[in-house]
Image (cartoon, rainbow, N blue to C red; front, side, top):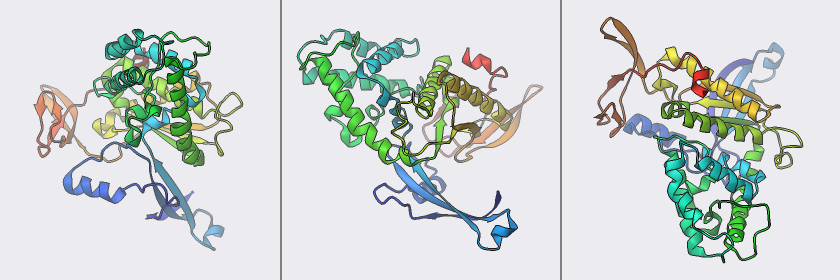
Length: 371
């Protein structure tokens, strides 16, 4: 405990990792009213905090100093971590089980039909692998759109391939009806399995070995409001994603990553973003929903060890609050300027016009969200 004297940015310790462009993002927000694009690559920032200790004895010598290295990376990459403990057969089975869920079935129809038409034991064929991979990637991208707001979408690099686009490590897809029997050498199944393992070896493992293993705190940022708006299927999918993440950080011999981490993450924060899209009267409800989601995920993952906390927050508060009269009723509203081209209640905004919006009420009974 103590009092913060000042906080400032310092040069980051890792010269091989891009710096998070904090100043550029702030300038874009303030001067151009442009919200930064979502994270598509890893970056880092060092924040140093100088503080006065609560202890008079400590204050006699010097002020306290804490350096916090913040590593930013796409959330999709974090969801790749569970793949390290799954075989290609496991990955394929789970992918098809999720693909037939009501919230996904129509989006996955083309990919499932294409997969059903291939012969797993046929000779490996590059064009067949490419068609399957492209169709699978299109299905994952459709799942991520706002209308569905789904969260469990591995492999993450299928959504943002970067310089890996077109590589064999990203040209594979799950196959239906696989058994534990070893695939015939030279077959389509053997090709897909080899490329899946290459994805884990050359894409997933280096990222986590070089970056995640150095962390002792993890913030899992979730868009709970988007999932709530999309419906029960999206909320169930968000819970599944958080469960898989927490299972990876569970200590003990049963965890396949026990030897992979050089240090243990001992605190995890599940943070629901965009709290400024709600009136403050609903903030406690949002946080309670996220608390229940985290508790359910911890129970499903048999999670113990790290301290898990939740919070509802906004990276930047972009709204103010007010009230409007509707008949005899007074409604709480949020006031802000929608982005250019954004549509709300059928109206398209120009990026300059301020408006007041009634954001609605979150359910009083939290269990109703998960039923």
